[in-house]
Length: 191
Image (cartoon, rainbow, N blue to C red; front, top):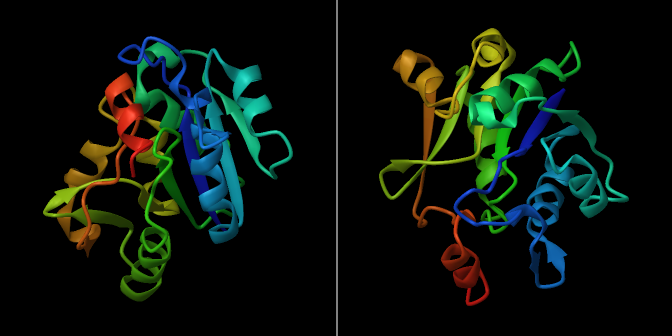
């Protein structure tokens, strides 16, 4: 089984309010991110934090499972660890995606899944205009490293640890925007 872990536990400090719940064309930002993944993977695990009830409400009716990070202030690494720990034992790979990235181009996830199947590499990362971005796919062999994460660096160190196990998929696209500030959110409305 291939799953997706959607990180939705952030504290939204730069936004000043919970960015995942902001309405973008009538739907919460986090719902856009989750709905884009649902048809492409066999399971979606949403990692929540302090806003657990509100995120669950924003995703009402979607076939997802939840894992709550008891310490979201510990950073993105702790949310990744919580999400990976919540995966079913037979999960072969997991795509780690951002809940605040509502405009991920439709071609990205299928290309990452195809590269994983073709290459057999343990990690598959997208590269937009020369810069590594999200989401990133990790095989089960890497899950112990992800479960050990802490802090705010996310999984970058896991990707960088052994370049031989990483397949990079280039996209002739700009980095998909995430929503960190009011300005970021305003830009989404003009795309």
